[in-house]
Image (cartoon, rainbow over all chains, first blue to last red; front, side):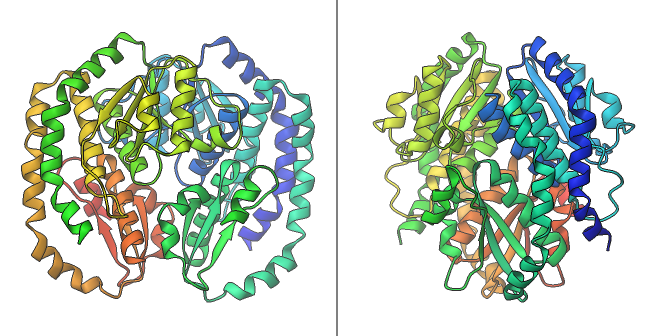
Length: 269
Length: 269
């Protein structure tokens, strides 16, 4: 099954990306420091938009760059686009074909802003338009649901964060990720057992916060695309304001509860 | 019933807001033009966050101001906040009590950015912290679900847009809104008939795009809070990429389909 084999390709994809693109990413960080970038204006759709959400948290916290997630329809429906002076304009797209995302990056370029594209196809129209490109080199994605390209986008985003902060310690941690992903994949049969319980589930919510707010969105998108379950993502903070009313006895709630400052927040729910 | 009476207060609330706050809002627009604001950094939660989404589209298109929706947890969980140079920092909160939103506005002030708060309580800690305040004057909100304060926030956002572009024609259109809201309220018995059909609905999706992307979010939040239906909001563009797979025969889909460029997009689905 294509989807399954693409999921299992992830450690190799991540390793290759670190190996082949880190010096390009350092060059990009160097260019961005020369320009006086005040904030990031990022355009993406679907899964790539979730990678953008991760960038919002990571670049926002570690690199102190505020991020505006572009509403592509501002460019495609209403005509007059925002003024992008002092922004870094970023497009994230696996295929590099989306006309919506292209219109945002092209407008950034027209206004003289630095433009960066994260894509799986360096020959795509999107990559050809941008000044700076990170090629995630994930190989062809045949399955309809994106998996290896999503985690490769996350890695590219983390690599740029590390390069911008010139933090060799964090780079060493990043280099351990392919092996950790391999370990997670080997939980396969445990996961199969655990999920039996949810076989006839029709709806659920997925909670995440901070760096894993994006995970909650991507997890619920995968559930929707692949299992037709109505899965709704929330930040645990927003969930407490109202939507928690939906949850009765037996209602399935999935939560991303890593270590760190987010953990206690999840437990408190 | 409190909720119902607050819904019916809307025309009067909107009229009062236009009457009493337009000159304050013009003053705010004047101040913002003096500062060299490059983009807006806006913090809000729940219903107020949906008002922020409307601002993102309206200020983005009409006033060409890009908007970053703040992730308050960047301030409350992770410690190191983004650098807010050249941003207008905006907090939207009915009560003005939210410590999350307050931490964002206080940080903006600390960094020397202009700060603006849209609130129903000018004596609240949030309003006391900000340099600029729009008091929506909606009167006490007793119902748990926000209604009149949401539409008043939208009006405040539209008023600022009009003031920034000094557009008297659009101001004349805004002045017609209270009467149009009154006409919508009078559809009450028609709405009651139409909704019979959905009495035992357990889940649905709500579609909106552009200026009404916010409406889709707010509509689905009201369905969740008040009827315990699992309602999920989407932009029609994102819905096409994947989640449409959830929709089988008989699955309820609600769409905001106004005139203008968004209409055909909805019909095409």
